[in-house]
Amino acid sequence: MDDEPGWLADGLAHVWQPYVQMKTAPRPPAVAATRGTRIVLADGRELIDGIASWWTAVHGYNHPALLAAGARQLQHMPHVMMAGLAHEHPYRLAARLAAIAPAGLEHVFYSESGSVAVEVAMKMAVQFWRNSTGEQRTKFVGFHGGYHGDTFATMSVCDPQGGMHTAFAGALPRQYFAPLPETEAQQEELDRLLAGHDDIAAVIVEPLIQGAAGIRMYDTATLRRIAETCRANGALLILDEIFTGFGRTGAMFAADKAGVAPDIMTIGKALTGGVAPLAATIASERIFDAFYDEDFGKALIHGPTYTGHALGCAVANASLDLFESEPRLAQVASIKRLLETALAPMRALPGVADVRVLGAVGAVELEHDFDTGAARARFIERGVFLRPIGRTIYLAPPYVIDEGDLQQLVEAMAAEIGFQERHAGK
Ligand SMILES: *Cc1c(COP(=O)(O)O)cnc(C)c1O
Image (cartoon, rainbow, N blue to C red; front, side, top):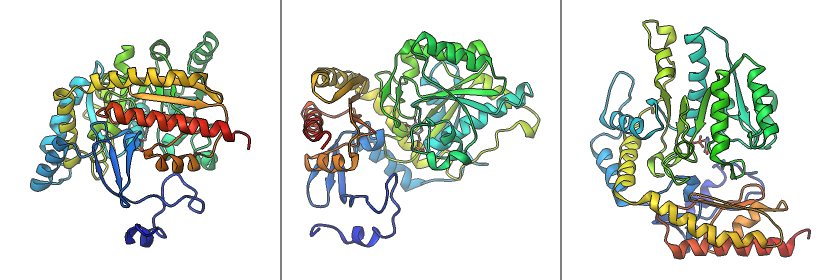
């Protein structure tokens, strides 16, 4: 550890890292800088980032337009609270988000993390019924394989078998779950569930890709069926686009690909291109109308300290500018073509259970469990940054990645699949 900076050695005893067993977690490599699609380590090595820092850095790192927007904002006003005051960027951003969001979504509530955006969506759904019909609809329908965040309400709608939150099972509100309605039998199960309960406020689903719980993909017809089932049974539909939003599936929002308009949509992750923490919950006119009243008791009572953060919103506006001035969706389409060509042959490799590609996401699922921590370390040795989920190795790179870097990511994946096959069962 000769090249290791002092702050890492000093801080390791005090930083409680995310999603790891601290006792067995490998020492994280120290990062000195980022640029483009690269993470530069303190020891001088460079890693090609295959997952865009948890799917946020869609324009690559250090894009000059985002840095300039952030610097301008920091110089004249990093932030000022939004309760009782208005400032430019959250207002501009809300109007722009309403213009590009699926039809009917008009009202933007800001928070600082995706989990909170989902919490707010759930609060909106419950209170919508109380305000509009007086019904006590307090339950949600989630799907097997779903992920919506790590706070209490959001954990309650994550895949109950997934294992991420089993420690809290007894502390969570109990919700309803169904498989995605991909077959007729599954559709009937969802129909029965929604028709059979009058306490359901909303159905919540990640459109087209279930990300964090395993990079599972499903088709637009299934998403449309979910939307129709909600409509037929009078349940609200919440689309969680925190992973899929901002071009990841090839359209600005996955809902657009299916022609589905939800009652409420959550966004986060790529909203600021990975520069600042910002998320939002966007509601339809119908939802908003149920809160719009003389009666204070009908107001939405939520207000994160940093709601409408000036720096975050300034960078988010600059990120939307980049979607207009640079060919992001065309870049997603070329990533998709390259991934289809490069990953398809892996289907024939021994030990591979499935290969999936949608937009700028490519996933190879193996037949057996493996030590993902050890795999991550091998990826770093191979000069790439990848984080397998469960049995799935996947790519969700910045959209600006060039063909050479993408090819190297694919080769690193292939090398790991070969390694796993050689060591399977040993
Ligand atoms: C990441 C994610 C969340 C949680 O967002 P955080 O910012 O980590 O709280 C919720 N839903 C989906 C679909 C996500 O991908």
